[in-house]
Image (cartoon, rainbow over all chains, first blue to last red; front, side, top):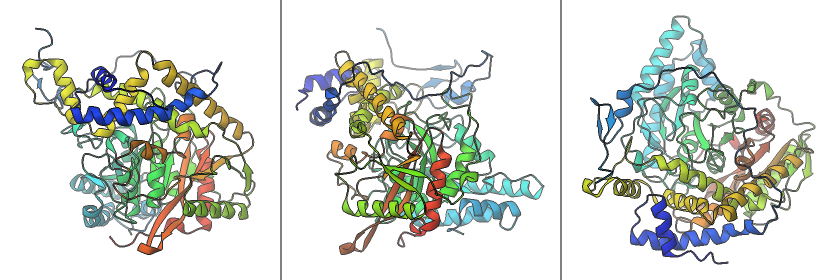
Length: 99
Length: 492
């Protein structure tokens, strides 16, 4: 069974996922993802009418706690991992967002 | 000492018959000798380990009560955060990331006296079944170095098998503790979902991920789980159920235990050598007093597609955080092209092919027009699979299967065909989908006489939710009547 996945589909998904793929990657993923999706399509033949979806397998009752103020990580420790940050201002620096 | 169990090391250190520093030096020496050939470690933290061991010796001498893992060297999979220790998940996108906090499991282990010797190689973000998807190169199987150790916790399993450490942590999303344990001839336990806090584990698929121990015996896995398990306010999905002393479950007796065998599911696609070892293991347990019961798991054959739809969907969301802003790699592209270009190039440069493939697949199945047909459908079949197990556990105590349908394959053998690689996960993916605990313990070897190779085979036991005690009891009893787990890989 073919899933009919095209290079245009792959480009659309890559844009959604914020991945800038090379031409070779686009061709490779089009073929490989089509194979995987064709295989995965077998689930569509199963009768699941009235079957609830399992989004998680957490069986305990909800765990709740008081909404108390607690210390968070020191700002300087967190900023130390950033590729570009201003420790003085306490900010991450990113390329321009609006022109 | 390299052959000692974690428990024996703890006993010796606690009694003051051997120092934690000597234990640490011995294992670090072994690690140094074999790691060049195995590539099991991304990072060896020798100085830190020796300093911690010396501190433990001082405290013991001063009369402080030693913890349940006092002086036990342990290796930590490199997708778990250790404060101050570079943590990469074997991905370029986390280069230079140094966690500012400890994973809860790390905190618990160190409080119990365990000594972290390093971070182990793995498939990038836990995505893989062969450890070949690592930015730092594949790990090699100590039993046959041209073969895969399994994945994704390949480094942890290889390190335990090669006697670099008596104990290691892995994480398991679709088999990543159990399959490498099977391939390396050691024991791997994936606890029940929620049994162990996931705080500080770099998330792959949050409804499936669990952290667990890799050891050489079920008894050491029980010792480790007793330390690892328990509620954690930093992980809302961690269970508040009481944690038993899992070592107390090890009675050595399987009399009356009902072992379910899904014969129809196992009928095809299993290597003959693997099947032979598995059948012999069933005979061993029957001879020890267990009852074998044929069970049906009619939806288990759909577990692979369900798993790869659910896990990739969750991964595409979890891995959105790697954007070059707060940590890790950032593309050195032209800043004038703006923020979105920086995101996309950073992610293309930082992620390996398999991670990109899974992000793409997950994004696709969550996208408009495909959500119902793939993601929602998979979640519904996940319910049917859970129901299958629930029904089976009305008449059996554990479910037995081979851990992997095939013995460890050659490096490079499946890298060109991701779907073929996924199909090898057929027996491990259903336990995490159903939230159930599962263990793999050595049950024999596939002999490849033409190359005088002996390739380990694992027996997988799956249990009821929160019934790790039963799994550990059966695996331990099996180990007491067999010697597969005591065998050592050829000299490296």
